[in-house]
Amino acid sequence: MTAATTPAGPAARPFRLAMLVPTLLVDVILPIGLFKGLEKLGVSPIWALAAGCAPPVLNNVRVWLTSRRLDPVGILMMASIGSGVAASLISGDIGSRIVTDCLVGSAWGLAFLSSLFFSRPAMFYLIRSLVAADDPARTAIWNDLWRHGLFRSALRSITATWGVVYLGEVLFELGLARVQPADTVLTIAPIVSAAGTLGLILFTRLAMQAMRRRLERDEHLTWPL
Image 1 (tube, rainbow, N blue to C red):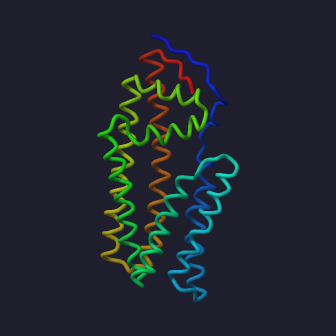
Image 2 (image 1 turned 30 degrees about the vertical axis):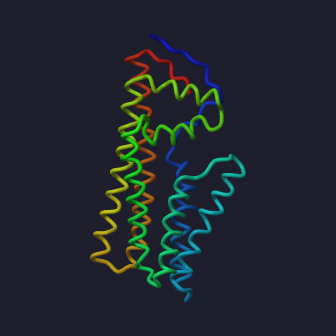
Image 3 (image 1 turned 90 degrees about the horizontal axis):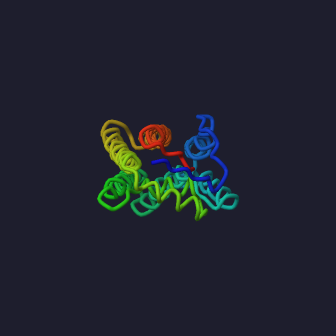
């Protein structure tokens, strides 16, 4: 059966690795740079850590004002830093941020994996928010793709991969904390986490492209989005 649908909006720009550079700079490099720079200037580590929230916060405000969307990498970075600051203020120990990071990472990983037991996995909704935004026609087209077995399998596999990688990052951070001081862990762990998230984004893009080619070849589907 051939399904041909006219896209309800403009085609997405081809993916290029260079498109990840602004995200890497604003959500990873600047927060870590602020934290380490302010710490060297004598600012309390807790408040230096809090200052690291500023770049992703401002970037998310900018993205929201211009497109009514949010930057997922920035949100993850803010959640990690913000929860660490709160824990540090309560306990008075910046090392408690490591525990909080692991709790947040575990929550994300378990959320992805547990969504596999529901009718549709988490990545079905997350990717839909990117490809359809608030366009009802594109949302309806995306929802209709669920009837294809290849589409369902790809979304479940992508969701499972995100969950496993997040839990793997938690294990890495816990292992690193056993052999390195807290400030070293707080420098390395965000880099590993951000690299993992960017790698997951690239993996998701490639997996979706492969699924699209298989649908077009095996089920003669004209990709509608």
